[in-house]
Length: 111
Length: 523
Image 1 (cartoon, rainbow over the protein chains, first blue to last red):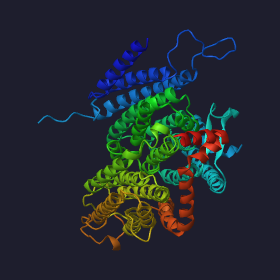
Image 2 (image 1 turned 30 degrees about the vertical axis):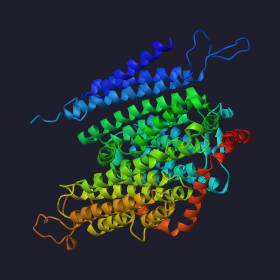
Image 3 (image 1 turned 45 degrees about the vertical axis):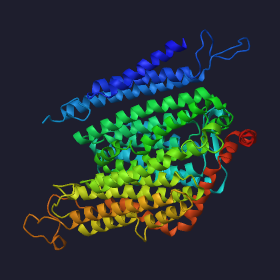
């Protein structure tokens, strides 16, 4: 399972970085979103991967999974959603105001 | 438990929310609430600063969940000083903003209060994940403030600012996740203790975690090569926002100082002093790049924005020696540079409004309406920021240069700080002579602006308009006059920072200190 998880993370981050380096705002936002997903999964796994274990400590449970990363991920997801919503609106406004969806507000003229 | 510690967070949070609810009420109502809130925060932080100066490190435990399990706020001398600087600066910026900037769009006052919440929170928190949360609050409101008033250049610069910082937040979380996975704690004092006992196998990963976090803090502080967003974002946003943001890069400086002396300090085992080989060279390169930007800019606001980069480079180069004397000198320089760059942003805005054609672009235009007033203010700001006697820039620089004397990098720091200062003077001298002397004739052909009333269409500033700027400028001689107490205070701050044991003891108690020291002794 660790290998599968790492591979997923690696693919997500690689795709995210590739998309972030594109010139138009939409791929860049997609890249930021993918990177955000990868980061959330990474945070989640910082409590180690365990299956079928509760996150609540109780006397009749010998083992439990670390509940803190789950709380952290929840916070990170909420903040990430707000940020993506904001940047989408900003990108729409920029393409309206600047007349281009290029991240620099217009492409360099080819001479 | 001292409940005053959480007040600088609660008050802007509640006030911001109230102002959001009343967004359709009159601007006067919003202004009154915003100003009252900022004034109250200033008074509270002044009391906190007094308590921190005279007393020990204090801790505020939210919900009484004792550390390391719950969330804590920690007030030591450094954080008390930072929140005091922030609130004084915010009050003055808001006084300037109510003269018209806040009319350009809705929600300025609410965003301003949330901005204060984020900055104060980042200074007070004792928990690295909450540092992330407060960073996000700070950034989200700063996105709104940067774009306040709109305009195509502002949107374009804001776009870069937002995207870079979103990426920075992701990387911050990677660093935090890495450290949590290895240490199992997010409380900064607890992390310091656990890091001291971390197995040697993990040293490389821990170092990587520490340096990943440095990448994020360097983006916030605008270090080379991560400062390219700053000149555009600060140069094109509205003046009071740019002036307030003079303290935002200092958040990065503060966090670097806090994390790399407390968590990755002397006791951190395999990851001890992980930043020491990096910080000084990076800061010096930033200083050089910023200085080149200062002389290369063709716009006064961009010149000043590059001066923010130069000041961060100077501060972190001096801090990068990690010597107590040098850190104390940097603490003296920090309020000076924050207030003076803020004052220069506001002066540039006053000049912009009276130069109808050129604005702050450095090309000849008709003379400004109030030449004597603006010229003298510009001169005062330039003398202070350029580091000439008798104002505070000079004394602070002398202290920094003597503070780093014992470091082996002293020749580099001396040369680059002094050359950077010279570049700043050249740039400001050139800007001043273009703006005030190299003027084109007035409409009626006369060039003698002194004997004529200002030409038509130019706003004339009354006393209330320039008062916040004058107060900001007056802080500089005040810092010189209070030089003795200030340097004593700075020495006390530096002493507290260079002894992380005090911080750990205040948060976790004596047992944790024994644990921390036993690891250091056993090595």
